[in-house]
Image (cartoon, rainbow, N blue to C red):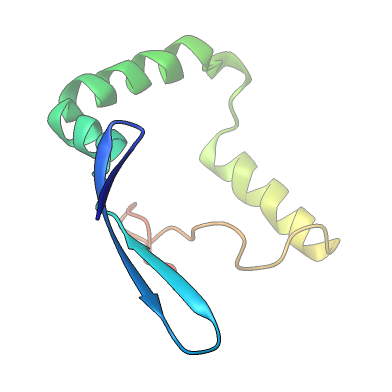
Length: 98
């Protein structure tokens, strides 16, 4: 038996036991959002970069040293757990967090 659900064809199979009738349905639904993100990857990244640039406030941003100092203070006061942020490697990259 096939049925149409929201414009998609679904295959349905009815199975019954002696006591409890059971209806089992199977459907394959494509990941449309994921597919569109994959197809328009560059445009999506460019749009997100524009939004980040529009909302950023570099004048109010903390320097790397100020951020480390405030983070250490927050950890010391117990407001943040020690693993809450991504640590930096000595070469300037980000360390893997597990």
